[in-house]
Image 1 (cartoon, rainbow, N blue to C red):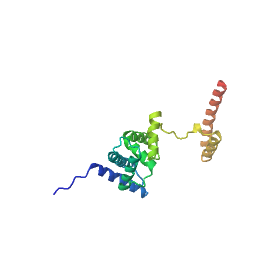
Image 2: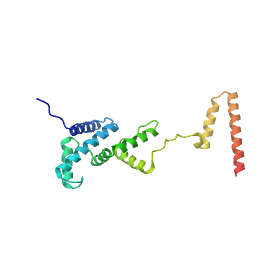
Image 3: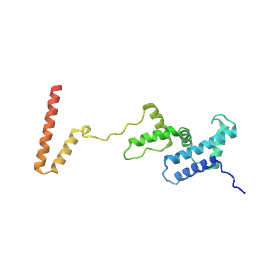
Image 4: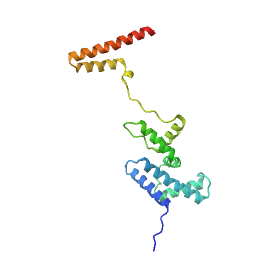
Length: 186
């Protein structure tokens, strides 16, 4: 006696259901788990389309069939906006992964959001504007003069008097050069 083959679609649905259950249990999801949920919903969409004979995922019969599938498979408490965004993300998985990788490359500390709506918006924004630019941290050149003066004073207070005088001399030279350049321009 041989075991019956398990259809691939049931594995996809099981992975998506497991990801949704993990999320409901307050465990963080990665991009792969989010995609598992979206692929599972695509299986449900295909089944609802087949059951109703609809050509597009619209209309009362389709909605009722898809809702019934979601209830049967454990996705009934998945918010409808998330369903729609997860379906979109699964349909555009390559673009979503590319956009996520581009966002990841521009970050140094935090990870990009894996909210399906945010991912969808990121794909659209990158298609429109190109890849995100690497964020630059604040520099001394962007600080207000008052803040810069406070920082310099604090630095000089921590130095030995001879060392402080040397740094003040270097600062005076830079300020004099900047003043001359401003006078020549103005």
